[in-house]
Image 1 (cartoon, rainbow, N blue to C red):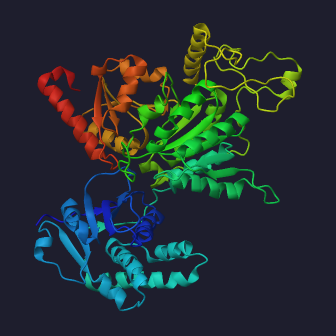
Image 2 (image 1 turned 90 degrees about the vertical axis):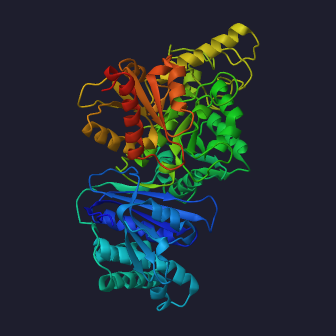
Length: 610
């Protein structure tokens, strides 16, 4: 028997449930109680792509130090699914704990001798008090939260407060839920021995909020001035469109209740992006939200946006591919698809938020960038950000914020006979001026086309006109580098010629990994890239290090390929660290992979290790 794990405000609890059993609200309640007690949590919902019946897991990392990425390993498993029992039990760390429903006895072979088994007759407790079959199923979940509350030291009044908030307006549900909670808590108090895991009140949450990335991005779209959304349902982006509608209903109505927005659920992804292009061309701030399969279908319209220079925003909530792939698993596998979407030579800006706060900020900024540069901007969310609740910094909402609509000629400009050629580089930054339809009855009109054209938007098959236009688009790309979010650099405490580059949701695991590696004497300068096109700072970082680890969540090293392609970088300098099983990357994975690579290098060439 291993020594039982003892830890206060630093452990991992995992719930193993059946999808559709009503466990989500109970598990979410568990996480929120800990937050209300001032202790940070990182929560991950791992769920199947069907509606009901398959396994689902909810993992809560309790960590007073504030590490919010997945750690790897489980200290306390709440095993409520017979289908996954063996794998769930196997996942528990030696010395960990297993909580299960002991209403029906299980053979000793189903347990391990190096963990502490905690049995509570949840089914029996609930059946004795509730007759309705659906209530029995739902309240069993709240009952195990009660058991955990007693074992871990929850403050009961916090649970009461949360239940009152959760069921506000449905007061009849508050008492039976609390009753089910108390059944579990009282049983644990009378019958179960204390365990080594505890939650102790702290003050480490501060003013941070607990919110999903899709919800944050949707609010960012409202803040960024979006008035039109066309979309087609697809996991994991659907909740973004739904969130936009919710926020528009609250914030985008006139005093008389008239909508100042339009949302269309189109017949497919192609229709969605077509509508967005039309709205953007007409002067609306417009977007769609989708995932990899949708981007594949939208390619031709994205190329049209690039060449005809029409603003649009696409929120790509990335999931496991290719094809249907793993719809409810996370990856960073759409980078090349989005960067060079469409046939021919194209390049599209991408923003890489690392948390819901940045999803909000970049969600708003993307519309300024799309308008100013007259192109499609991709906001590259990931399922791990989009469909998970994160503890994140509060959003900053400035009522005085002005939208940057870019270079748009008005009626007054045209009346003053300001020269207008739709694709002329007037200011030397390669960004042309445009007009909205109907601006002037006789001036400022042009023909929008996806076919080759000259700088006055006239159809042309002359090679010189085509080359001039394509070269200007490249110069515009260079101008863009100074306007997209800059990378964030963090230098190691010790001098090193090794670096690491990463994006998006890798950040919390990377922060923890860097801290642990430094404690082992492994120093890495770090750079989190926040946008494509890559700024010169990115390539300067690479060129000042002997080797740079590129940590990403896809099989083929797509970020590494972009760096090589865009910066003329020697591929040997960039060392891939790739995690792509569909689960969020962990600090343990990064530490082991980088550590193993450095050890292997040291064995071959001791002077290369640092």
